[in-house]
Length: 214
Image (cartoon, rainbow, N blue to C red; front, top):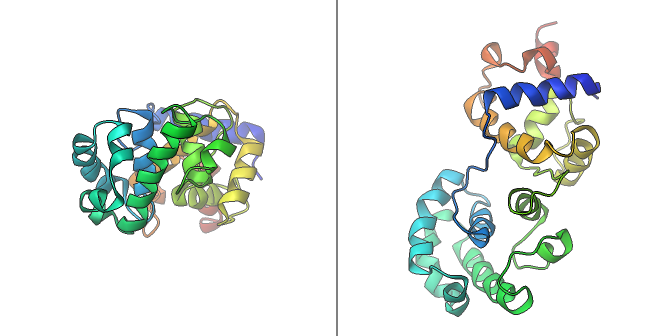
């Protein structure tokens, strides 16, 4: 595993590359991020961002979504894949948010996991981006892959293990934005099929690069 100074250097290098460190999903309200994240399962953020404006224009409030039937939502999200299950989760989660949480997106892992369609990845994203909870790790595919290449984790593809290992080495106040920056880096430079190692700023600290060049 990486030495603390190397971890801090990686964190800073990514901050310099991607100063904003924000989620790629577009939203105006807390619950919109919750549902956009649900739609992003097995789908690209780009596609979700194309779909959600029409969905949230047709159903501009949580109450409107709660009154809908899943079949009403399906045409808006059809291109996201698994649209029937996702539409059902959005409607039922809307109803639960109103009935149990006074229309607000809850701020604990346990409460978030009680919502239909919400797993740890979605819950961590909400905790980090909406509630600004320190120590949050969103272990998506980019995060798992790149943190393994860097040597921040042991290369596990298990989101739970990735989350635990990154929590142990990242500064809590940096972890949420760090994960967003790994996503941005995975799209721009460290692409899964063809990583641009010669032009990667993280080369000095990357275990994968060092192995390939020694």
